[in-house]
Amino acid sequence: SQTIHQWPATLVQPVGSPLSLECTVEGTSNPNLYWYRQAAGRGLQLLFYSVGIGQISSEVPQNLSASRPQDRQFILSSKKLLLSDSGFYLCAWLPGTSGTDTQYFGPGTRLTVL
Amino acid sequence: AQKVTQAQTEISVVEKEDVTLDCVYETRDTTYYLFWYKQPPSGELVFLIRRNSFDEQNEISGRYSWNFQKSTSSFNFTITASQVVDSAVYFCALSGRDSSYKLIFGSGTRLLVRP
Image 1: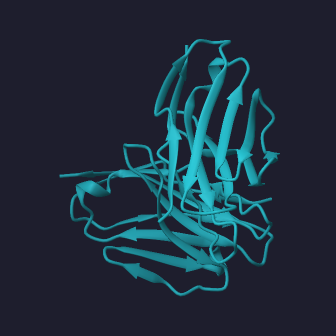
Image 2: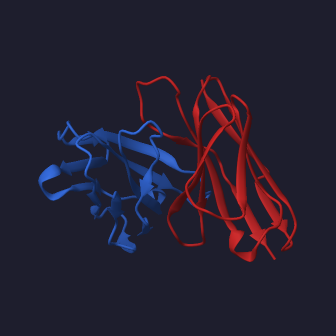
């Protein structure tokens, strides 16, 4: 069966510090991978998605970046965090081979920037 | 442009009441997919249902049922005999047929079921 992991689960960082959030998927190959952000009390906003290794599409211009160094690994980064980067970050995956269009979500990382 | 509207920000009901969560969508795609996800207090999004645009048949799963109507661009979700464990934020989402399969989410409806 497939599982998705995210770490860390929670993170408190000062403004201006770097960020690295990791997402890994097990039990599947060539998945589509997604990063979403949920600001406090609000809906989910797609930040990045990837359909393959090294292929990153950005949905919202910001000081965040994403990378996919391996097939089942998706990383969200920032060189200098802003207060507005606080939120709940969710990684999701979708099977790369067609048959289902359903995204499944990881447990999330709660980021607080102080 | 694609858009999902969940006009109900918060709903509060007493246990055992039936409750309907509304979802209205906009898309120019002829083929698209609609979803409902549940977000309990833990934060993880739990997949509930997926519907494609060619399947307007309503679906029932236990106490949950979904009513998809293309004529009104709505995909409403009903919980029958609500329980305290149903308390969560519920999101409706839409995806088109481009290769990204990215989801457009509504703003969510917070459901509080009181004992």
